[in-house]
Length: 102
Image 1 (tube, rainbow, N blue to C red):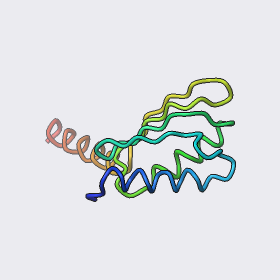
Image 2 (image 1 turned 180 degrees about the horizontal axis):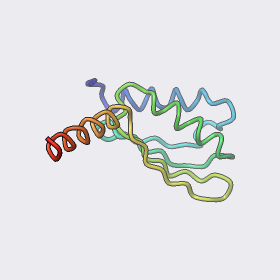
Image 3 (image 1 turned 90 degrees about the horizontal axis):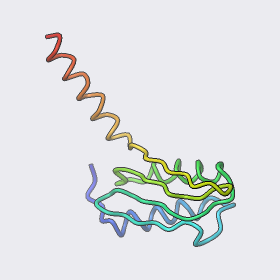
């Protein structure tokens, strides 16, 4: 767990987005609230979208990722769990399984 501020997370997310060579500067807006990142804007291809999501999801402190980005003329809406959320979900399922079968 990290105690990074939303401003710090936003700064790192913007750095990651700018590292995708084909994405125009300012094409994607970034909002962060309590570690949950929301991306909005327009990209030229789904590949750009996947590149952005992959890079942003690895930023330390990102607890969740919502994407509202237009690509190829279509609005793409994604919700992505972070690795920490996946670990918690697996742990919770194992606990529930132990309680039910135990």
